[in-house]
Length: 189
Image (cartoon, rainbow, N blue to C red):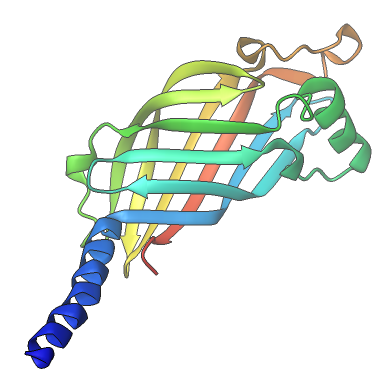
């Protein structure tokens, strides 16, 4: 009788581990994604990179979320980084930018097979406390269980209530080019 009870108690942790493992299937994560932007003109180079983007991808339904801390953007010049955080992005008031959306054609991506897949992504992009709907093209590359996702798109700076002082308006492009590169790994690792 005691052997049957012990066997039943051993079975519970095994079942729980199976449920937890199954729950994580199809989900991918990164904390080291790259987000770069360029808002420069022929008069001034204005580029920065953030190597700490966090993102989760649920491959089963195509849901995608990412967040970047504004202060983690790195510029070539410290003064430019200070101006970016204090004057334009007001990073103490608006500490992060985020995206939440879906891969529209997720059924076209075979996450179990190596290959490259063009995707369309639709969702809400929040920058400087302003949320706007966006639809962008991107790509997903599946390679040996890892998922590489990338997208390049432009935003209009004033759409996100970012003010550009008249004294530097010719040095900052009205459109900022954004490049997102994410390397995901399975979440259950």
